[in-house]
Length: 593
Image 1 (cartoon, helix red, strand yellow):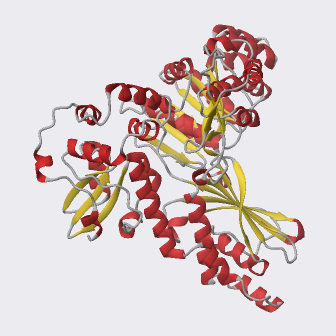
Image 2 (cartoon, one colour):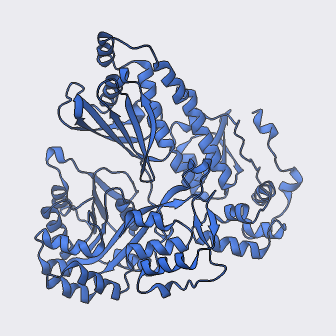
Image 3 (tube, helix red, strand yellow):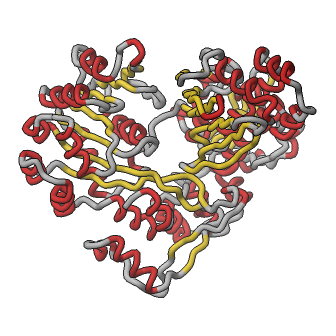
């Protein structure tokens, strides 16, 4: 490869050197690239969720990226490859790989020539990852080069970006091809009858690929009556943004194309329809989209596509939980029986949290069944069932079947009705650990909601182990967030919002106190925010809580008792994350009272 000739590599003398350090970080100290104090500080900041140790060293302590990369490569007796935006994307290798998977495991294929696969990875000695690479991409020979985490991410983004542009061209180019003079009625009806128009196909594919690349959760297709166009909006980190407008001449063809991809009836526009797009049938990107159509005013039809990205569970230790909540959740997940609930609105990460919990107990000696709609996160060792409400196989039916399948643990995607809740409660009383989700606003309200569903108070008090309520808040962009010293009034307002127990945070008002605010940069599309984190409140079913359940309590009594037992509210956990510099109070107030 011509590009490889320009890349810095190690000399034979450097490769022959014997390395005495036990880790690559110790080797950086040995080679005087960093000091031990810098490593200690970077490790502390990394544990607070500010990135890997290497990224903290580069961003916060101004360590030379080139020097760090070459020294780490020397430690591994390997080549160092920095990011090169002109490096050609190996399309045939990327088409079968998920970019999120590559980022999570910090490796990316660079090229395959004469049967030799060249891979960029942050640790060429990681046995498990190398075995995964060999199983995913067969080759006669493998060579591994060292890349820093940031460079690996940049290569992945660049490769998939190049792959998309080669396939479709830019969205502006495609729209330009649609900008034709006004069509008459017969020509417009022709477009709606023949939605296989190549530009329409490319445009739909490009919108989905771009939305996936932006980290969108939903794509909203909103046609307006008459000569108005089709507005496309995308939801990123919980907020909708305008994306593009499709000319009105093409609205029927555009919507028909999506319905064909989802196997829906294109002639039926009077009632809602639900479907699913397996996008890999139409484009080399392995994602699914859940499609919902809705008739709207003026004889139009809206479409909402939710991107269902297959993924792996997030480690529970990285979710930013308080130590008390983390320890309690681990204890409850190891109970032989009982019921553990995660609650919150749609899209608040409930299923993600449950899968993170399941990953901690997913062992060969534990039989775990899940019933989900849809199955998004997969784990080897779990037996996962997709419910099909249209044929009568709903959550209640799945629960009855799973109880005959010798389970130790059952995870139910959602308790939507009294029947499912009752079966789950009874299962938890007969020797099974049951985990599920529920749509309620807070942990204390969940108990009254279950009692309102006519669940037996005695059974509920015996079965319940704990209730975790959560919300997702937007996090400040790490590239542009600005540190500032808050005023005394701002500090006091945060203390008042926190309420009783603020002193437990041990954050006095001092001259060196720093909060952070949003500014905006190209990395976050000038919003000041990028990504989301969870804020949580965890109610433990203590004997006092169980006694309250038997006496038909109101929500306030349950909340007061839970706080006495150590629960911090959603608002309190949000304010804690404000002081940690992860978000700001405006984002916390958007999602909780």
